Image (tube, rainbow, N blue to C red; front, top):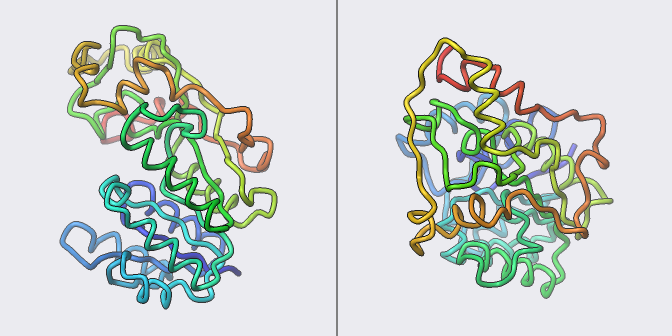
Length: 287
C-alpha cells in the first residue's frame, strides 16, 4: 500500500485518478483549496471511498510539506490557471522538502517533449516546469495522452452540439478515456521503469472524419445539432491549443524518447473509440 497525494482531485482528470488510487488499495490524500458548492459532491464521494481530504492553499510550501510527508507520489491535476500561476513550483518545493519519491506534473495532453518553444503559452509553461523538475533533481513521470474522449470525440455530454474544428478533418490525434488515463497514470507513478520517463498513451489515433463516420453508423436515425469552428477563427492568435491540435497536428505525434503505455502495461487494455461512441450515455448524455 502506497501513499498518493492528488492535487486537483475534484477536476476532470483528478477525480478518476483518485478513484483509481483507492480502487487499487492505496491511501489517497486529496488536496483542495476548500469545499464549495461545485466540488462538495465529488469530495463527499471520494471520502466515502476512503480518501483523506486536506483543504488549504497548495502554494503554501510549509502546509503542503506537512500534507506530503510520507507520500510516495504526488500527482498534479489542476486547471490551467495553476500552471500559469506558478503553483506547481511551490508544490515541487514541498515535495522535495517532504522527501516524496515521484512527482507527476500537470501535463495530461499533447507531447510537449517534442513541441518547439513558441507553440503556445501553455505548452511553454509546461516545458519550463519539466526543466525545473530535472534541475531540482526531483524524480518524475510525465504522461501524454493527446486528448480525452470527453473533449476530443463528438458528443452531447460535453458539448451543446457535435462540434468540428478546422478545414482539414483528416488531421490525426490521440484520445483516451479519463478512466484509462487515470489508471495508467497511477501505475506509472509507482513503477520503477517509469522514473524520469515520459509515457505516451497511443491506443487510439483517429481523425475527425473517422469518428464522425462511426457516429453516423451507430446512430443512423438521429439528427445531431452541429457546430463548426473554421481554421481562420482558430488561427486568430487566441486559440493556441486548438491550433496545435486541429491545424498543426501535434496531438497525433509521439516523441521517440517516450515509452509506450501499451508496452509497459499490456495487462490493462485501453477502451477504444468505437466502444466510447457505441455508448449512448457518453454520446447523448443519457441511455
